[in-house]
Length: 135
Image 1 (cartoon, one colour):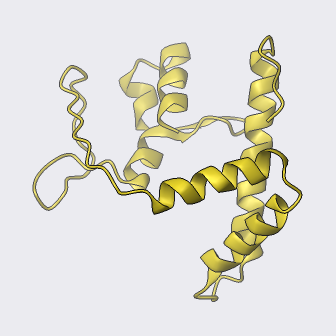
Image 2: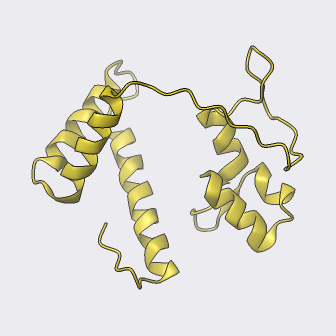
């Protein structure tokens, strides 16, 4: 995205906020009652990628990953001691997008809207960093 290796934290946060805003604009571009909203967003991304550059590279990588054989990866985190928010039908802690959003909140909003992980990690810098990591 053009951040120089010696870029500052503020510059990275600015780029992340711009990316989040762009994603929100894409989501809002499709009418709420349109069943084909994802297709509309996909078409918007395709149009943006036609110019090449970073967007073209990103879209190409996404297509490769989408067509790749899926991998099952088992992850176990025992040391945190955090109670599961939701469980799968098999009884394992769920890590769906909605669960992660609930844990992370939106730490890049101004002011930040923290999720449950913020208090679990004691708030402050540690809580903020936990929410950013989960976002």
